[in-house]
Image (cartoon, rainbow, N blue to C red; front, side, top):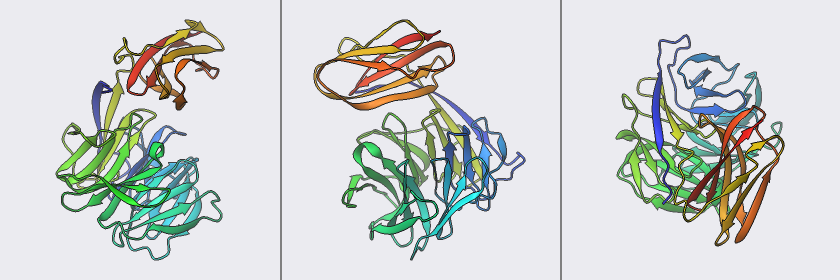
Length: 357
């Protein structure tokens, strides 16, 4: 099994800062401006993971779920989904969902679609936002059976992962080809609120009973409790920012946002005797070549990290054939220095490095 080591650091954003947090519910990461956006009812507070708020985002509002996509913050405001420019905060879209009762969770596919859960009506809406001037929506799941709350999009399996409110809350999948539901796992936790995943396929779920963040493996066969200094209080719509490996936790019980930083041990290989990549040249200006031999066709994920463990580039994520493979990386980091290239082949990791001159 793939093993990744983590160093954890926790920061807290409290009410003592200039922007008063009085009605927080959700948080999203804006990679364009490298800042978190905290839904605070009648406004959206901009905040770094150093726990220092940076003012509000224009006229943006957010009562519940939010998503950042294509430079737009989409948020639930009453029975509508609104869109705001992530830089200026200007409203760029509004769309009312017909028949909505209590809109709550939101997920996106990163390109043109949103999905929204209706907590009271037990429905899932699909919202097409390809054209911000003419968005459209429809109900794609008429009855989720359990009370739907948080949603996250799983691109690899073309599905939504949905958490539920209530005791022993099940975690479900919604197949986006057929819109059918299946139970991924039953749980002993209750009143699940938010869900998100990291770039390694692990899932994080916030719950109110107990007050906790639970981490699930990709196949939901194992789980563990994430350690958060000082604990959490009614954690709501969480966000895992893959770009900086940080989990943001909005706590509605005390209007505090907590940040848990996961710094992966990106140079620790798994089973180097079974899988070993190579890279050349050591010092590069224009091109860097990564080679690897595969005993069978497998999904390969290649990523570049800097010396601080920050993800610089997601190079490729696709299936490679059996045998000798070579990948030429032409878009290299612009800053000079040492970089590490992670090569995941299935469950095996090999790491090569280069110096950008």
